[in-house]
Length: 168
Ligand SMILES: Cc1cc2nc3c(=O)[nH]c(=O)nc-3n(C[C@H](O)[C@H](O)[C@H](O)COP(=O)(O)O)c2cc1C
Image (cartoon, rainbow, N blue to C red; front, side):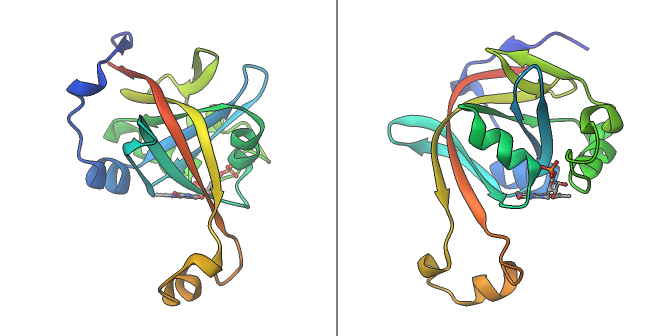
C-alpha cells in the first residue's frame, strides 16, 4: 500500500452521491488513547462559511457521537470495495462493546492527532465548525419525522472544515 500523500482539494474528482451514498465512509473521532469509528452513508461535501466543508448526520445513540462532541476534529475516510465487510461491521456494531478497529481488521492512524483508518484511500481531516441538532420543528415535510425518527433517535448535523485531505 502506498503511503498517504497530502492532496490538493482542487484535484479531487469525486461524485458525492456515489462516494458517500453507495460506497459509504467511516467517520472517526477521539484521541490516541481512545477513538471510535462508524459507517455513514448520509452527508455531503461543499462550501459553507467561506470554507471547504464536509457535513454528516449522526444519531444521538451512536457512541462515535460522544467522541465527536468531546473533541474539535473528526475524519471522514473512504475505503476500497475490499473493505466492504469492515464497513458493514462498523455500521452494525457499537464501539461501546468492543474495539471496533480490531474486530473490523482496521488500524487506527493519526494525522494532526486526528484518528482515521490506515486502510483508507481518501481521508478528509475536519475541524468541527458546527453541531446542529436536527429537530422536528424544522421539518417542512411531516413525513420525515414519521419515516426516520419514530423512535426519537434524532440526528445532529456536524459541519467540519476540511483542513487537510490525504489520498493514496
Ligand atoms: C451503510 C450504513 C450507513 C450508515 N449511515 C449512518 C449515518 O449516516 N448516520 C448515523 O448516525 N448512523 C449511520 N449508520 C449506523 C451506524 O454506523 C451504526 O449504528 C454504528 O454501529 C454506530 O457505531 P458506534 O455506536 O460505535 O458509534 C449507518 C450504518 C450503515 C450500515
